Amino acid sequence: LRRCVVCREMKPKREMIRVVRTPQGEVAVDPTGKRSGRGAYVCFNESCLKGVARGKRLEKELEAPVGPAVYQALQDFLAAGKGVSGSTGAHGQRNSRPGPDGPGHRDGAGGPG
Image: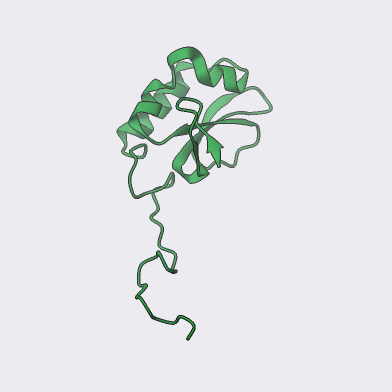
């Protein structure tokens, strides 16, 4: 679980967008969540993505200045529909794993007994 720098809620990593300060000091949006460096997370919802610039929360968390291009990139995620809470995760994929909560599960099918 990761904590959103705006609302401070703990959520799974896939429900958030990561902003990273690289070892070279560059601050950028990291949609893959795999770039090396210090990371800060923002929820994929309108209120958090719009409120991230207030109070310089990313700058405090990353201990580095955050340029307007980073805030614009976060707004672009929101505008593209990637930041809207719903049934898709951070990478736009639905949970399609088989199992008791996944698609194709029928009560009484394949259980012990």
